[in-house]
Image 1 (tube, one colour):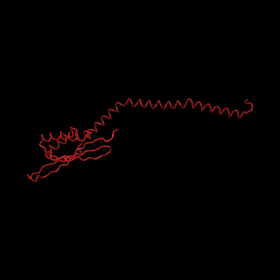
Image 2 (cartoon, helix red, strand yellow):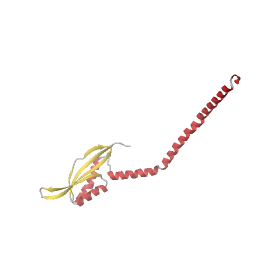
Image 3 (cartoon, helix red, strand yellow):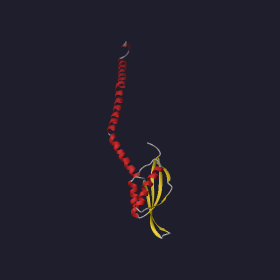
Image 4 (cartoon, helix red, strand yellow):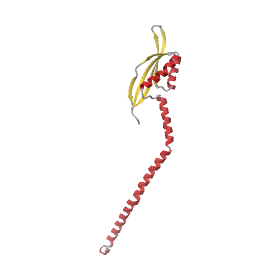
Amino acid sequence: MFDKFTHKQKTIALILGVFCLLYLGFKISVIPTIVLSNKIEQHELIVTQSKTAPEKIRQLKKQLRTLEKSVGNVETDFDVFQERLLQTIIPFTNSNSLTLSEIQEPHYATINGYQVQTVIIKIKGEFKDLSFLINHIQQNSVGRISSVSYNLKKDNKTKKMYLQATMFIQNFKVLWKI
């Protein structure tokens, strides 16, 4: 049967046959082994990540507490925020000879997926008491004090000077969920 072919043709056929067998062997055994090896590496990575998950959760919770401390208490309802703010400020002003002179309508702005409510409060009193009030608001995490402005004003009726602090207190509401 192979007598018709020359020695050179038989050698070429043999070499082609060997390459075909090598290709089939590679296709059948080596490629699935490489694919399984890659899957094993992926699963080992997932196992490693799951082992460190509790530590990452603790770190993220710590970061969240730090953010909440710097931002203040985040109320989802602005009415609840205003109520908590007044429940914190009014008893303090009554006990520390401060006068709550004005509460302006809140201002709203949307920034980076948050709705920010800014309440402007004007309080009269001594500098020391006003500083204690600012500290009290920050300690109770009612909101974030973004700015405080002190102005020395003159009361036209009594002809006396008084110190007035204008506080900008903010609350954040998340508009989107992660």
